[in-house]
Image (cartoon, rainbow, N blue to C red; front, side, top):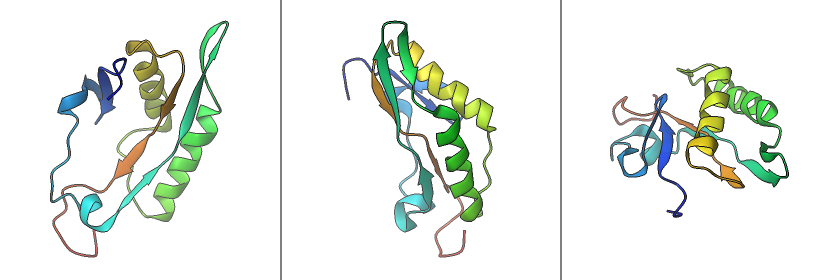
Length: 111
């Protein structure tokens, strides 16, 4: 963990980095059932700038739809969470990794 990263957006709220945990029997761990994006934050003279956040989150939701994964948060909530992580951790440049995963549904191939 970087010295700068103290909190992470997890299940709709900022939590301390070490408290952002998923269960070892999570479906995503055993079967890779997750979708993600990689979003860059660049340092600018006006402060940090998230590169094409809306497009990245739209693609995240598109991937979830293809995977038939229900998203418990709106695109706006996830975008706000991404920005909140940058702000609260006082990041000037960063790589944000929004991840949605299938969690506690029991083991088996059909979540």
